[in-house]
Image 1: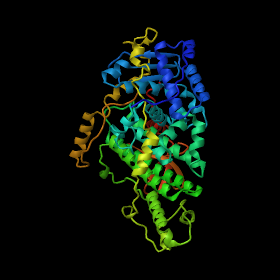
Image 2 (image 1 turned 60 degrees about the vertical axis):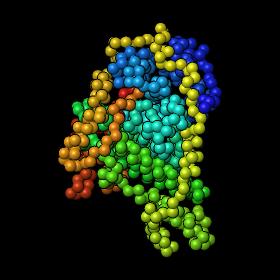
Image 3 (image 1 turned 90 degrees about the vertical axis):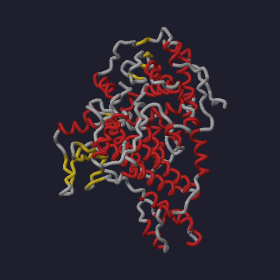
Length: 473
Length: 65
């Protein structure tokens, strides 16, 4: 299959003027070209992205430590990207993963001012603590994956094997599901979601907040989402952790994941109500909504399975699907009963159902109907929609990564690229401690140990799917 | 926490369990302990505890250092 066709930018003269090593030019050009194609950037926006890069990236460095768990870092103070080719090679990371690591860090270049943007979901909290860092990582990784992954292949493997679930990612593989849940709740494709994010906080907030009749609903939703993802991130990547994750950690992760699901359902509910008020095609709305709920639930379950040793059936306090599904079931019943009900239009019915705050059972009882259980609700064949979704969102084309677009390996052999070699990378003690601990967290041994302890207490049955790597890039 | 967006009219961001107790945060990052017997939120004023919990909630950037 031929690779994807897209406009190729060439900023070699800018890179040369700025002193970037020549071996880095192909990758930098490719990053900007793919960003423009994937996220729909105009020439002016690409130029602005280039200017940000020139202003915030001075140095590219190769870390030669094969035993380091870091794939790459970006240091905004030193305006430096450090790539660990040796480490990635030692872990048999693919060439696509190398690209993804590089593109992830390029995504971070220039982001240090995000917290000063009033529209950003990154905010400065109490005592100068940053909020929203984890969700920003999720977005950055999702964008890098879209710029590097073979979409079709990605949908056929790993977490992306189910098209409802997230596609494969190189970094933060345990947190990405949250990003998929959020854009599903907002009713936009991953591509639309990331394109809006790529164009900056103001644009992102403007586009996404329109999904709700009350723009503040979006801000509240994002505040809760970032709280949840930051907290999960903190538990899983805690530099101060002594030893393995505890039962309390797992309970917190479980509750946070369930909370995310609840928040997404609530947001989806409000967003659907807004869509209905604005006028929708009943059939499309019904199919899309049901598909989105399936997708939300699939990624929720994926998040639980990735991050906890519980099976889905053991989670007694998983929130009920009821609020949104009941409304949709009611809508479907109402739609199917339209002829029976007579002259009312679908919109009139929806207005009568008052989706803002409806007791479906009560409303339907007015019509002599009873609310069906979800299992009894009229089924909707979404297979066609899923097919359309796959082609629209993931694309039938893909990046041909075999093109000679440069590589970290090529950069490694460039004399103008500095090597950190065996010298210590000047990370803070906190980050170094994190790196040491990352190898201890979530290993199979740890989970097995945890499970045997839990099983001995008769508290859980063991079904474990936990990765041992993919910590970060 | 799942499903609880507010308690006693206080809009909440979320909750976290720490040392056997569940602490709630509001949008302003005030931290509360829920008094189950009296069905009310108790505002935490202990700066040490507040900082410990806020530390638990802060994502540490690993690749932006």
